Amino acid sequence: MPIVQLGREGRWTNYHGTGTCEAATRFALRSGDAERGRDELAAAAREVREWLAAAQAAGRHVRPLGAGWSPSNINIASHCWLLHTRRFNRCFRIAGDDVRPGVDAASLMLVEAGALVDEVSDKLEAQGRSLWTSGAGNGQTFAGAAATGTHGSMVAHGGIQDHIRAIQIVTPAGAQWVEPTAGVMSDDFIAATGSQVVRDDALFAAAQLPVGALGVVTALVVSSVPRFLVRPIQNLRRVDRRALNWLSAGDFRRFSAAYALDRDPDFVQMIVNPYKPFKRPAMLRFLYREPWRDDYPRATPGELGAGYDALSLLGRLLDDYPWARGWLLQFSMKLGYAAGPDIQDPPVYGSWGEGLDTHRPLADLFNASVTIDRADLAYVFEQICGVYARHGGSTVVTLRFMERAQGLLAPARFAHNAVIDFDGPRSQRTADAYARVVERLDAEGIAFTRHWAKSCNLDAARVESDYGEDFRRWCAARDRLIPDPAHRRLFASDVLDGLGLTC
Amino acid sequence: MMLWMGWGLCALLLFALYGQYLTGQADIFVSIANPRPLDEERMVVTLKGWGFASAAQLPFVTPEADHGLCDLRVFATRRQMLVAIATLGYLRPVTVAWRAHAGVQPLGVA
Image 1 (cartoon, chains in turn purple, red):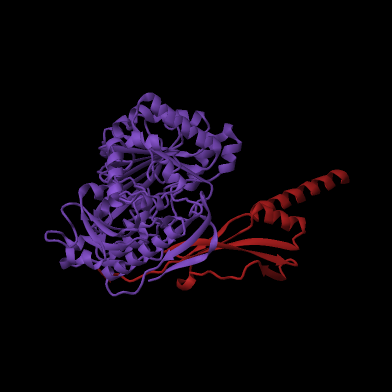
Image 2 (cartoon, rainbow over the protein chains, first blue to last red):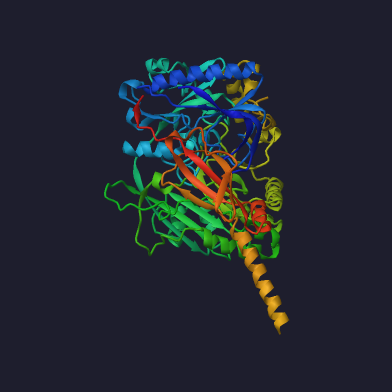
């Protein structure tokens, strides 16, 4: 299982083409063919530790990279050593004697850090299991998605990092196996992975969302639920302003009854045109969970409405013709949204994994968000749309819902969260309009956070004030995991330093 | 009358040329059904003599393609289309981008 160097020092561009590492030396960590997963992890930990020592000796910072999916510059670091983990992507079944007494081994799977969300879904489904939530796409590595707090819009669940039950992290000082205090894996298993066991709730909560600053994550133990089917309903509807109160109160059943099926939805998403959001039809998506059955008619990801995360059509036109923005956005919404299945269409079903898509790279993407307490939604949503549209924001505005997510630095930190996304064509005017939205929320005294993987212009002072005591606990956990300041600096980058995560 | 027809024809040809300029930048994307993509790599292929010969600036080598390719894109940049138009199509550079497959590993035991 060698770490191999990929080509010479040069430029590396992230998945969506939104950020570039200059003068980067690229390496790849690859899976081996060991019979047992624990042996793979032990070998990987040794290799990564040696690689870190070599980087330190060469005086270079390091940056572990999954799929490079984040549109923000969180994974961008120039003049450093990059470690690509995409080919370190095996998954392993966990047996009853690998875990501590009382832990349900059948619900767990050992995942190498380079496995995509899609791969994890596939492997779980093969065992009759499923993730219970994930982001809109499935092309991120599971470790990378968790490291930035990726989420979807499953109304009763948190972020993707909530699936994690244990993490192997490698630093120059060695490999550490971080679990909650109650423990998950057996001591024998952990010893066989070449790791030192760390059972500590505070460290685990920090490591669930490490933002790439706590070392090289090499493996995860991922929890799952019995697999299930989802029935999607997707339509364009003019949404009544009063419906915001239902959403704000968490009355998703009423919202669903008004615009889709009269039953409790598991997933609710509304994409609006910020130019007259309640006069122009919004794009609605609902998912309804149903028991698994083997004989459901298979549908393609397109028929299941996959690829619902962003619209980046007509970017230049939107920027060049501000007077036509409202109409052009509505036009692009009609073009870009998969038609149906609506309530009158024959129902289609799919597993959770089948409804996600590894979409093609979205170049020139602007991608930002604010996460607010759901209770504030009715009060601020129209203000947000108004400010954004008035200052020339040229993207749709997406509304998603989730519960509090795990991890000290999880942006979804309210008990019930409304996540408002601004995803679409990149332009300076749109970035400025988003900045005005942030200013308005501050002026109104509305608490909010921003997504680590999106272009949200955070700085250290803001991170500290947004996360407060949790940020201090995260820093304390970091210093316990990596006590040597020189080792902490190894994972530094201009971006992470700017966020106060590696200083 | 003939003069106006001549101008009309010129305008039509200009529109046709502009249409070719725009459509030449279209991004043709072909993917396998269940991709596991690695990083994108690119090369420029220049068709010469109206397509009778072609030359790539780089040989088609991708260091991590032992599991095959996930997807392929073919497109021309604005500059490449302008080169094609300026040389009356004699030179037609196009960019070919591809992503290698990370491989699908069987489920193992921990």
